[in-house]
Length: 351
Ligand SMILES: C[S@@+](CC[C@H](N)C(=O)[O-])C[C@H]1O[C@@H](n2cnc3c(N)ncnc32)[C@H](O)[C@@H]1O
Image (cartoon, rainbow, N blue to C red):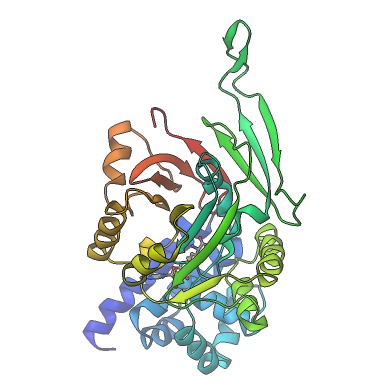
């Protein structure tokens, strides 16, 4: 290897080791073992170095291998499989990207959406297949940890461990997709708002009615995450029955025209989750400036801590550690910490 490639190789090994330790260890033993294995394996590292830098991601490699038939087992088995199928695996990695679409994230958008006077027009930027554009078609189970309960005699502090279960269904009745969410320091939504118009923007929209594209979304879900796979199957069926309008392009370039198109007698909400991390810092600023120029539009951002400009400073000012959670911001102001797949919502005090 040339010296430059050696340096890149070291970086890539470090990235795979970090992925194993930080991202996979607690949630996917299979991916943790695979990533550790890749980090130590000269042959696989060498093959990965032949791909453009953004295509060397662990998530993309493992999803592509599983999509093409690699079984979840030891790293030794994966290695043998990869060496025998590298041409097709690398071709798929070049063609596709990690567009994981998690309908569960609707559970952390709903508390804000339910506060709005409807009807709503939803615009999602970075929508993938658009599964998050249907918060009105899923049922929700919130497990709310009570801080206090109201009574005629005022607020009575209850056992801090007491939990209240709140179920909410779409107006048409119980959905086949029921999203569970832990709620702390926040009121549960009381209703599902009416959505009269919806559209998404993505660099490469996924057509949920296409079996292979649906199957790619399944391959992106980590091996042990059966509940997420089940949710994806249910949500995909709901959305495929009434597919969303998804426009192809960059979020900064397409957002103005979609805002202009949404019905003017509705409350327009622009939202995004797990998207801005893929966008460089000047472009994030540019997008935030576009949103600030539309104060009549509600802007919901659900992104990793510090990804949305200004949120890191806000968390530091409240002395809060996001601890791997996302930050839900409303019009640029941090309101809650959320589980990355929508599994929890914790309101920030004073927000
Ligand atoms: C990880 S997925 C998240 C999908 C969805 N928001 C969700 O929460 O399930 C990120 C999506 O953002 C899209 N994306 C990334 N950069 C973009 C950009 N500059 N403009 C539009 N879409 C973008 C990707 O193509 C991908 O589909």
